[in-house]
Image 1 (spheres, rainbow, N blue to C red):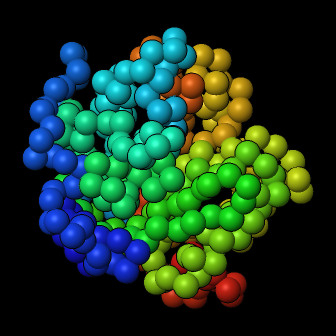
Image 2: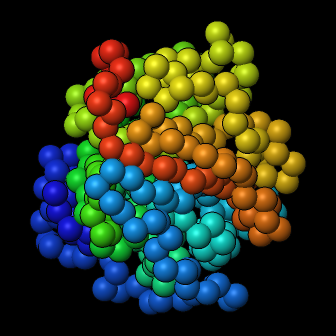
Length: 301
């Protein structure tokens, strides 16, 4: 595993050829949005060998374009600062067309929130993989892979294995943005589950905009997630941000990463900064059961 701040890639160790810091940080001036204060200290419990808890969130930033039509990355940074999270999955963080450069100032983001990006992009000035980014506390140790997801639209996921500051139980986090078509989402879910099944047996979270609004479990494209993550039929509505009706965004955890107190972050700024509200939750991480489940995905559960 590589220390945070270094670049790694699909083979858990590939670096950029020119050795530059990620995202052009050596050239980017720090500009903290007005009213944004540095976030409080790392909020996770002091980790032990068998348990800890942390605050996590997922946020589709809509390419930093708000419901008023304004492009304003500073507002997104401010909303992320409001969350007080230890780990955040972001969607739509890069430009959609042409060179997929990152849309957020990562130095300002770190100053305001204490969070740094896992270098998921293949570009020195990018931020995510197919728009998916993962923010963690400085001092987090990571390795990750980029996963291309099947479907009509270009979609992907970032799968990261993390050791948080202070040590404790490693944690796998899948950050994803699934497609608009039900049949594509079902195939993308299958690809994510296959990738998890080939990984280490550690607590696992799935965070992201999963684009599923159906409450009927038999019709949901997320039904295949239930053996690992439990019921997926209901969550807190997060879209559209001005009047949330649909639960498109999800925070899911296996039995060793228990998700509690899920809520949409409905602040005045969040209602205008993006067309989605952030989703946040507490997650309780614990060590392996003595008698794990008898499913093919049991080692991740």
